[in-house]
Image 1 (cartoon, rainbow, N blue to C red):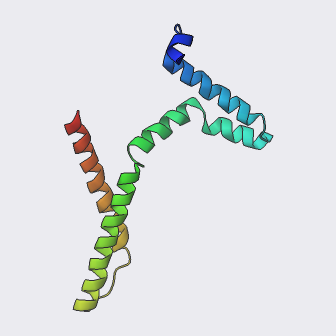
Image 2: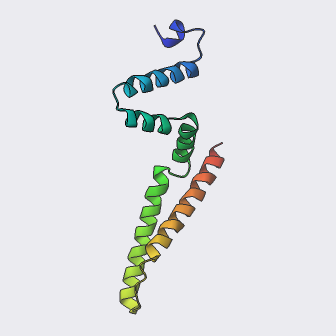
Image 3: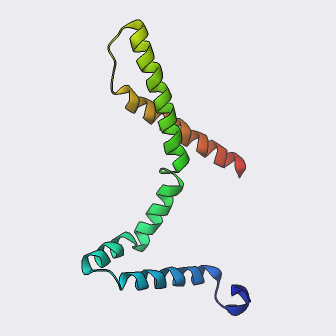
Amino acid sequence: MTKQTIHKDIPPKALYKNSYKNTLVNVRKHHRLDKKAFSGLIHANGMDKTNEFLESTLLHPKLILSAVVIGLIGEIINVSSAEIFSYNYNYLLFIYFFMFGYIVSALYLVVISRLRK
């Protein structure tokens, strides 16, 4: 038997929400008071929606990984050119390359997601 046959009247989203809520209640029973309060703050309805938005857009693992790769490539180019052309090495350039890679990757993901729709 599947969930559809057992719970014909309850939509799947409601089942998911009830299951999630029951799991949180059961886990919180075993926590101390301070951990219960922190869990209540973290898993508040607005906070969960914010976390879902951030993990799907701004904090996407592909974004962070591509920003680090672009920052590393830019840093290697910067260090090698500083040694070849004998100028002072700028330590902030890694941050600049990282931000550039993050912005370029974010724009790329937005364009790709728009093209897929």
